[in-house]
Length: 272
Image 1 (cartoon, helix red, strand yellow):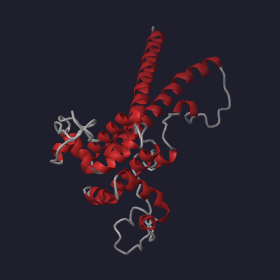
Image 2 (cartoon, helix red, strand yellow):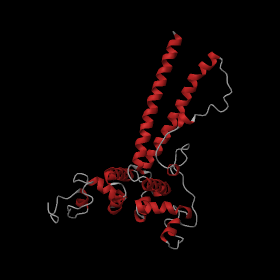
Image 3 (cartoon, helix red, strand yellow):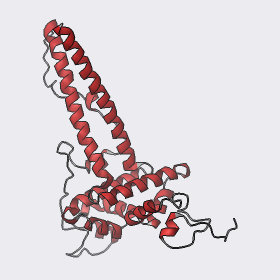
Image 4 (cartoon, rainbow, N blue to C red):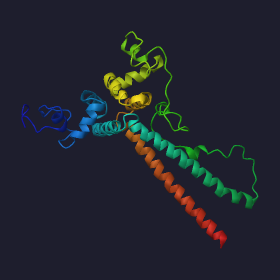
C-alpha cells in the first residue's frame, strides 16, 4: 500500500467521518468493528488525549494501555458518577466484609482448642485482625487509594472547598467567584488538576461532571482518582486494581469456603 493510498477506514476515522491513512495512529486500536469503543473514548478522553496517553507507555505496552483506557471510558459512560472507580470501591467493601468474616471464623475455631489445652494467655487486643490476615497488596500508591474515601464507611468523600483555586493557579489565571473548578480543586490540589488536564482535559472534566447532576462532587473525586492513578501507572491503571482485587476476592472466598467445610466436618465428628 503506497504512502498516500487510502485504506479501509478504522472505527475512529469512520466515527470522525474522515479518510483513514496508513499512518493513522488510531487504526491499530480501533478496527472497523470497534466503533462503540471509540465513541466512548472520544466522549471521555478525546482522541488527541487518548493518543498522548498511550504514547506515554512503552511501545510493547501501548496495546494494554489502550485497552485499559477503553475499559475506563466505557465504564464512565455507563456510570457518569463513579466510572470504574465505583467498582474498585465496591470490591474493597466486599473484601473488608469477607476478611472480617474470615477472622471471626478463625477465632471461633481456635477458642475450643484453647479451652481444651488450658492455654490461657494474655491476649490484649488479639480480637483485632492481624496484619498478615488483612494485608492486601495492590501496586498502587496509597495516596491514590485514599481518594476513594475511608473504606470503613464504603463511600467516596467530598473534599473541602477553599476560596483559592488550584486550577486557576495551574493555569496562571485570576480565580473568579464563579470559577467552575474551585469547588473541586482547592489551592493545595493543583497537582490533581494538572493530572486531570493530562488525562481528561479541563473541558472534558466540566462536561462529564455535569452529567452527574447533584452528585458532581463524587464524579469529580472519582475522575481525580483515575487521573492520578493513570499518570502514575500508564498501562493497566484502575483496570489493574480491579483485576488484583478480584483475585484477592476469589482467594478469600475459596479460603472461607474451605474453613467452613472443615468446621462442619469437626462438628459432625464431635457429634458422633
